[in-house]
Amino acid sequence: MISISPKTALVTGATGYIGSELANHLASQGWYVHVIVRPTSDLSLLERQGTYSDFVIHLYDGAYTKLLTALEKSQPDVVFHLASAVLSEESPNNIDVMLEANLRFGVHLAQAMYCVDATSMVNTGTFWQHFNSAPYDPVNLYAASKQALETLLQYYVNAKGFSIINLKLFDTYGENDPRPKLLTLLREISCNQKPLAMSPGEQKIDLVHVNDVTRAYEVAAHRLLNGKVLGMEDYGVSSGRPVTLKALVKIIEQIIGKELPIQWGERAYREREVMEPWSGKPIPGWVPEVSIEYGIKRLLVKH
Image (cartoon, rainbow, N blue to C red; front, side, top):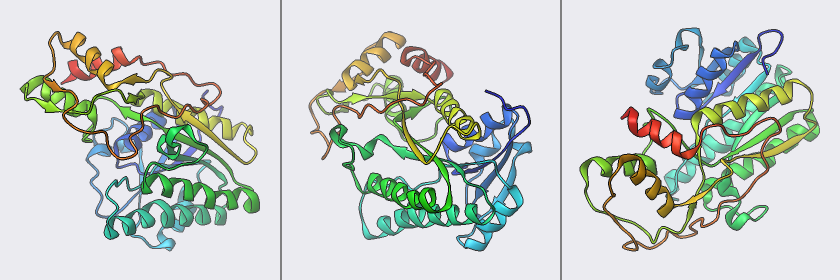
């Protein structure tokens, strides 16, 4: 998988959990890593990475010129686009934030790439773009904005000669994950034993460990570098083994050796609850290696 000569990566969204882990993974595999951050960004997730001293940081204040300068200085072989605003509440302010982060920034990035003849991108999507496994039916406005960016990027494929792989992520997790995710909540109640009201628990969850996710990005990058992508390709970064919420809780209970105080059925399913996750085809050359049992055990033992 490793290229003959070192390659240069430009990573957006590197201050987030997945982005920071990807930057570290790429650097550990011999890539030169450049990251784009805002002046107000919290760099703590990046700074804790063992390869942080090797990263080249570019500040972006919302101005296209700053983005263009970052592309001119980095001259990336592959751009990894992970930056996004994940907001479920569709208030007017949140809509503005999502349009800025998920559309305007992405198009500015593509235009700056074109100006420096950088035409290979690994873009980040979500399985929420496929409610009830439809070819396209967004679960919420966030998912709709991710699809909208793909549509805009198609122009750069058709008119500007870009090669793009869209990786659609499922439920990601891993050690030291600060995000308020389901596993974090379940870990907390395993410690404090406070009763938790939940839905009936029949919805399926597709958990993919961060190590598998970062490998998927690198596999995608090498597919681009090896000239195997003509146009735009879409892949799902799935465990291939979704489990119901009830089954997930059983797995955790078996690992920790005690029951969790879950009050099943005390809450209704959310509007447009994803009961059966979309099943997208995996990227060639990638298979998940971290089983849900092993990954959760590592998570629980770590904390």
